Length: 215
Ligand SMILES: N[C@@H](CCC(=O)N[C@@H](CS)C(=O)NCC(=O)O)C(=O)O
Image (cartoon, helix red, strand yellow):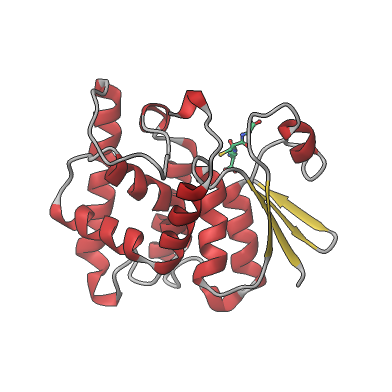
């Protein structure tokens, strides 16, 4: 077994979920090392794997890759059969833009609706900036589903890096009962019904660490 993925708490670490899901979706064998976050020794443990001091980190022999999107790009290159990006250049450009938009954006949603697998689904009072994020994400999911539904149930039909990037966002829509359109709702079900997502969520629910700031 060559691959090791360093991740945080499954209950909270949305960035860790992304490459983990991609590996599981494609049945790529790997070992995982879970480092519970924001404890006294968490930072030093993460730093022993990555100078960036954040999870996720992928180790492939002598090669270390950190940052979720970089890991996904690496995996797609390392395992071409996974077709991490759509084949068509225009679709690929759009997929890359959406993955980057997710990676660098939606900060209001991310800070007010932190991923929390254990949360009993319920809505809560949210600032306007979160609704702007919800609207844009709903639009992305609706447009992709309208355009690519004949190729499969994922954003570009087949499962791609974009789906790995948006998977924790789909979970947030469910956990915080965020209202959206019917295509986006169907997409959320596709993500949450996948066996690998269920495995991650179940494992998150089993964890007992509580990070007050994320509750
Ligand atoms: N841009 C990074 C973000 C990684 C990140 O913020 N990870 C969080 C956990 S989800 C972390 O490691 N926090 C621990 C810390 O900052 O000490 C990525 O995409 O991987």
